[in-house]
Image (cartoon, helix red, strand yellow):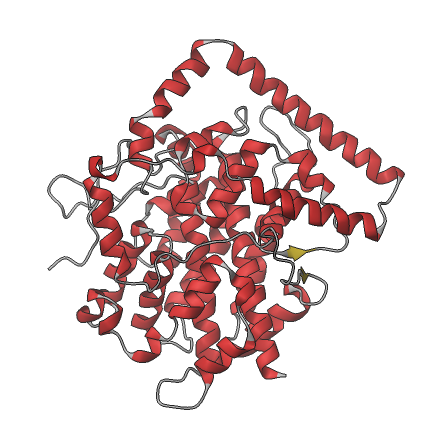
Length: 467
């Protein structure tokens, strides 16, 4: 019996429903490098759609594949089938059937027990015990405490050793974040040569199909039909360049006080509450899309408490959640050494990947050359951390407001917090003059910022358990 999850066929050809096939293919003219990387580090042994889209940035792709290969294939505390099952549990939190199906195959190939794929009630208790931390990491990592850690590592037959737990946490965070990339980039189901019509049944996200079929074409037609759309987005680009220049100058002129910086963070955090636009919550009548119901029930066997989701860190009226001051527990000074100590070498691989994406630049913005985009990359990264309640004392959050316009904020929040709700319309609506490769770069930044935020909370809890 096929354990994969059934879903509708994609409506577009190529690896992504958002990016024209020719753009990805052109980029793959540096294909020798990509092919070499796939041969070295691919777990499935072929060029899948995620890899194709990421190969728009081969330097990054190399870091990504290396660290993923290490987590899934190399020596580590967890047995191979466990690793893939944990990937399935993580992807299921966002109903990401693309990743679930990929790891169902890998789970069976590495000798996993097929019965486990019937759902959580068939797995060993110790795997079931990961449910709570999977759920919190995926949606509200700031709620993770040392008590959660103690419960998992306490003595008893189902306990986790600390190295095993760190391996599991790294996998969970990796796959939650990768689900953000899959939905944010509109990754299509794989075409499967083994299946007669060329499609392997894997879901596009819940809204993609309806979204592509419904409103999107009308909107695009009206944009390209008049010159207004073009002029508008060009001036949008010029305005952004202008704001970057102005911020740079202001920064050289005067430093904001600590107090002012703190106020700006609180303001940005509160404002992020309102970044849920009307188009985040399409209310499609489900009866029209029978497929969706299948997906949800199929996926739900891998999770408990499916209704648990992201809630704003800064919910109105709730002041008791302390902000995570980045200075008190940083990746560089704390997280990195802890993770490396308990699960050797993964710290180096993750660190390289974080640095790679953060520093990656071609010094271009759309049609402009020789642009320093540091400020923009930092605003994207820090805005994700802000939504997870992480604050950098030395960062002026006023910059986030200046640099990220509303449609981009809606997109970031959706991709980071509710990736399964991302639509093509949201992807199309921001930075209309920018190249697709630049938008993929945004998705890589969001993915890594999210993964790092989850890890910081989990590793801080482990540190507290140890002290």
